[in-house]
Image (cartoon, rainbow, N blue to C red; front, side):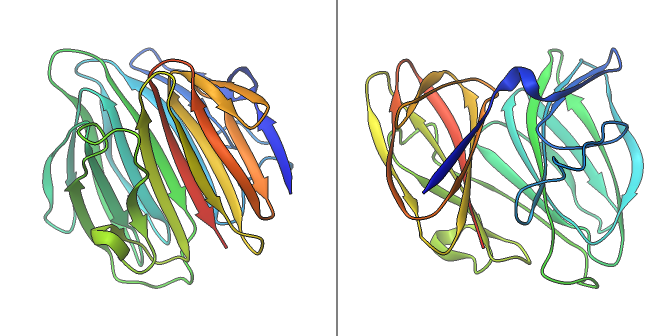
Amino acid sequence: MTMSHHPAQDRFHSNFGWLDSWHSFSFGNHYDPERLGYAALRVINDDLIAAGGGFGTHPHRDMEIISYPVVGGLAHKDSTGSSGVVSPGEVQVMSAGTGITHSEHAAGEGTTRLLQIWIMPDREGHSPRYDQRHFAVHEEPNVLHTLVSGDGRDASLSIHQDAIMYAAKLTAGSSLNLPVQADRKAWVQIVNGSGSLGAQQLQRGDGVAIEGEAELAMQADDELEFLLFDLS
């Protein structure tokens, strides 16, 4: 088993006034050939969108795009006819496929924080689609909740890729075992709080790449929220 720590301060950073964004991998004008993603995981952007700010209508294609709101709401509208607000506790999935246009704006009077995740699809040319769903991550702490998967397991949102996205919120002092299989890869992203994974101390914004089967437990120092990606 190998585990590689990616500290929050080593992420790429963009600040446009209305948008303050931290990029775990190469994105936009930030390019490093050694940091183009991890397995099918292509983008993890930790975005702060000021009240009234947002992304005007723009196109995507052949990408599975996941939004995970942390604070505030995200108003969404796209060319499939879908529209609405995604709030903390909800997850949004948009399969861009052959082409989709959409807009996203901060909803409400305060700053919106969200993690935007891009995962490469299993092939090009899928039909565009949109879905969002509420999950009990905040209501049921100390449990690994399945949010997104390639087969829709456990009432999760489905994507066109052999990947699973989990989330958990741990109470201070609690721990949770993480499933990491020998023939797959995993990525852990800390959303809020601090804790440790094995001997590695972690804080908000840190990422950890894992390869090989391991018996790993996430231990929360204080209230800790994190995402886990199971990747082929």
